[in-house]
Length: 201
View 1 (tube, one colour):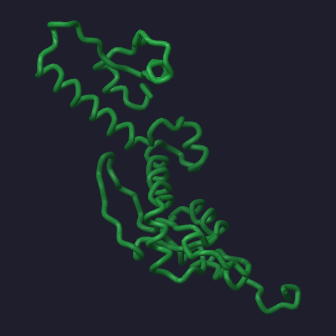
View 2 (cartoon, rainbow, N blue to C red; view 1 turned 30 degrees about the vertical axis):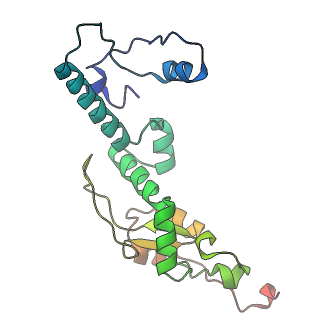
View 3 (cartoon, one colour; view 1 turned 45 degrees about the vertical axis):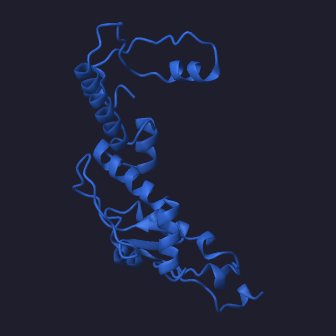
């Protein structure tokens, strides 16, 4: 964590803390402590406390913007990213895609069919469950290129999202431009075989 926000860590101490208790909660706080500050009685002013709290909140915001506490090597392996900025954008996009609120809204607004290969879970697998549980994934198709750290953007549902089967979703994240559905459709080498005798019930 300290490596992810070094400009804030240097404002505080990385020394371990002792909360004087063997109980679970204090022990957990001690183990998870990355950096902080100890104050001596009578030496603390409102100004010092406000400045330290402000810097700690900025550190927390920076940590969240830099993908939280997920180890860098795991993030880069998952994203296939070449640098931390590319990895950060990928992780941010995945957070948006995994939001249950976004998923439900997109599935409510769109027909539950893969927008690349045409896989229809109801027709092709006999899926009969609830729409929001359909085995399709929500892909955030609005490019995050140029998104600066700490910058926020609004997205529109369903316009900024695409419904994809798991295979197409994985493939679109392996392309140079994960917002280009047309390019992924051009790469597609198979068709859903609904009409062949092999697929008779």
